[in-house]
Amino acid sequence: MTKEKFEEIYRRHYPAMYRLARTILYDADDSKDVVSEVFTRLLRENIAPQEDKIEGYLMTGVRNKCRDVLSHKDARERVQKLYLAEMMPKQVVFIPDDDRLERLMQFVETRLSPLSQQIFRLRFLEEMTYDEVSQAVGVSKVTIYNHLSQSLRQINEYFSKETAKR
Image 1 (cartoon, one colour):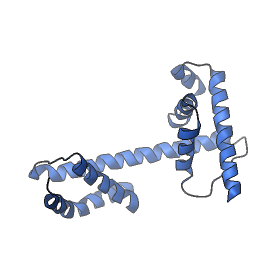
Image 2 (tube, rainbow, N blue to C red):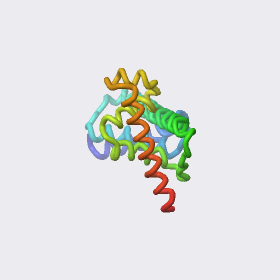
Image 3 (spheres, one colour):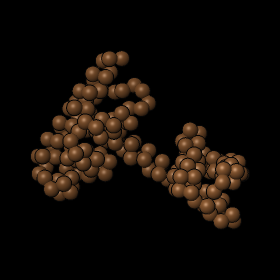
Image 4 (spheres, rainbow, N blue to C red):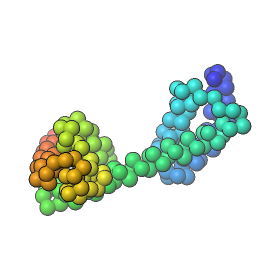
């Protein structure tokens, strides 16, 4: 696809794509990101749908990306809710800024062992019980409890120190 052809498609379809994303997501920034990702895929993969099918292709791409964004947000909200519920009997450290879930997931992915990461995801993202996690991973419930306790303690310590620095 030539640069001129891409620019023409972009100018012609961007407004409708943005409106669709905004209608689904109710968020201007996320909507812009979704539309940009669809156009990036069009360019990167050098996709050239037929002229009469380009609008359908682009709008379907926007709908699918919006679904991914909503699914990701839903999972993040579940993690937050379950994490807070798990920590409620203990003293919970609240991080005041908006990116706390991203930082939590980054901590999980970079600081926990692969087994602890898997257990954390199954327990909090998949909302599995201790028994279900135990069966899925193939270790005892005591091991599941120990990994979760250690992971939550590490998370709590990390964010306590981070909060103290502020």
